[in-house]
Picture 1 (tube, rainbow, N blue to C red):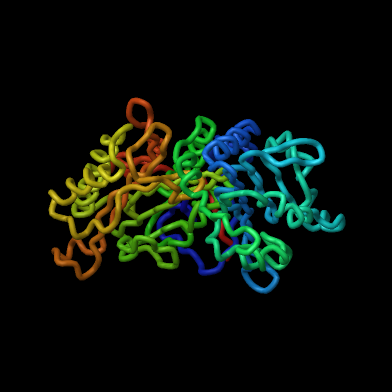
Picture 2 (picture 1 turned 120 degrees about the horizontal axis):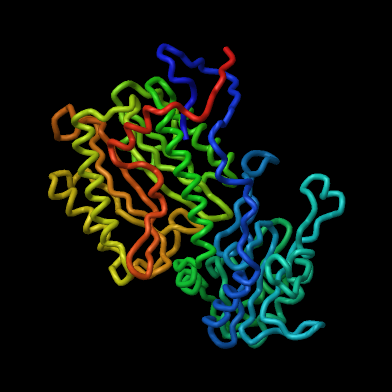
Length: 462
């Protein structure tokens, strides 16, 4: 997570530097090579087909590539629903599911994958194209076509159908998907209502939400790896933190540990809030210099094989909680423990928040707990879910907090004490399992770990 210098007293950090990382801890994760099986993706698509209405077709698109500036694009991240059903991380790809099947040259099929062929010379820029060679073995597809054929097959899909499931609002059907391709061919989009007056367009969200909110054992294993990497980052920050470091330096260590252990990305922009920034819930600029006696809220998560972690810890930058910090911290910790204890199948989702809120309210800090306690976790950090009863296989966060900003109507000695403690919790058949238990959260455990030498050695060139 964070750390950026040896602990020797008096060492200063220049504004500009070159760092050389030497990670001396034992490596517990290899380069990410974990994938879900083709069978899992096949079963997911079959589950969607089973819940689709009679005489229906569903179309799922890969996420579009987004421009960052000029001809530079943001690092690509696949649409979560598309990834859930296909496992494919490539853009310019379309999945079609047909309830009663569709006839192709080589027989009848319920599903077709369309991909965009690359010009041969693009392999030197983007690498070898994995589709369609691996489509069957890796993702379970037996019928793969070029996206050039999609436009001509739209009529085959839609003729006689009563329902179209599509993951954008209906009005989007009349607009280009991108400069290169259209969801519907021009000749069809202009006359869609006229040609298919009985076609009802529906969102597939309800079907996908019901499926995605229950994690399979294989998904849980990937999520555990994402969480374990995140906890490793938290522990490195605890070992390395000291007054005078910048929030962005802490962030640099967090994301170094993520990458070192095989995470593809941070699941969300890392929140590293010190001093007055501890009370900014989604602080993300991370530019402030820490000062002795302050707290730091670390709300971070690694993304591993598409699955997110989301774990928060609050630490004293100098390694020891003050009396006031300790007092508020213990209230939040007890609220979190009570809320986690309430997690089990059959409990209403929102009851977890009610339990945490009661502890904080009873302590007299109701007005300083300004957010919900839990959200679902999975392919998205704020994952899909119905917010009904908890069920075995769901993964949720439990993250109460108290945020006392400067100027609050309390004694000044409590100002700028912002505390959030967050764990990722799997609902099991008989209760729950804390996936993020390896990251210390008891005061004594945190202070003990913060006395250890960092496992990251940084050399700065002045």
